[in-house]
Length: 75
Image 1 (cartoon, one colour):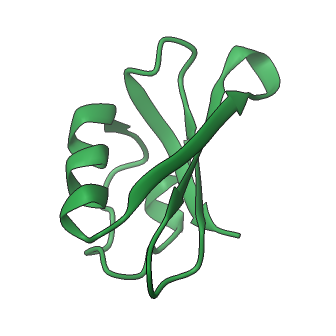
Image 2 (tube, rainbow, N blue to C red):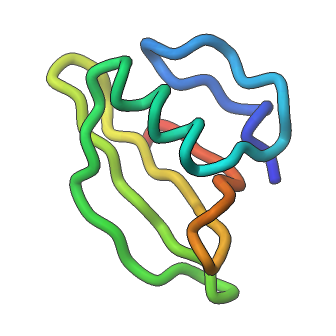
Image 3 (cartoon, helix red, strand yellow):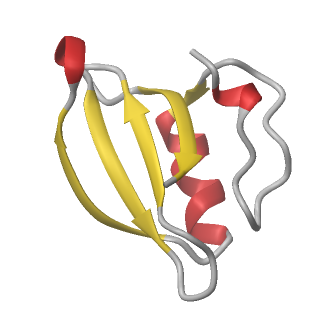
C-alpha cells in the first residue's frame, strides 16, 4: 500500500496509500494510458500493465478482487 510514494507521469501526485480501482483507472485513461495486460501477482494480487504513447510503462498492483489499487510505478 504505497501508492502515495510513487509518481506517474501525466497524473497528479497520489495523496492516499490506496485508491479504488475505478478512480485509478479513470485517472489513467484521462491521462492517455491504456491497459496492456494483466497477470497474477504475489499473494493473490493482480498485476496490470499500462502503456502510453509518450511515457514509460506503468505496472500497477491490485487487490485480489481488483477493487483496490495498492501501488503503481513506472518500470
